[in-house]
Amino acid sequence: MAEAGKGSRHRAVNKEAFEAGWDRIFGGVSSPCVEVCELDYSANVCRGCHRTLDEVAAWGYANDDEKKRILNNVQERRKHVENNKS
Image 1 (cartoon, rainbow, N blue to C red):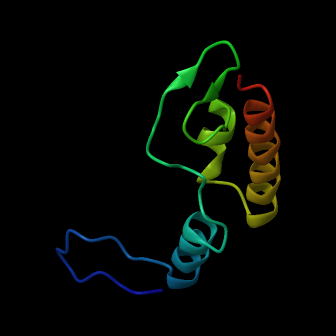
Image 2: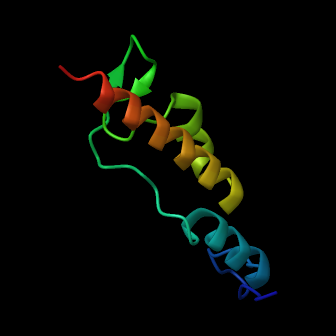
């Protein structure tokens, strides 16, 4: 663990825990966010990324398997939207 100097305003950081957290949040699975955050109240999903509010909130804490499950849900919702366009 890195140590902060006496009187330092920085906290000591456990490098392994930091890197594990970084990988979990910014790891291999990319977010579907397209920076169009607008809730479709009838479907209760974001019109930009097609995630539910719960999925958006969980994304930062989800592991890669959970993120892939969310992305599968997103893909199904996008298909449904495209199939119902007139």
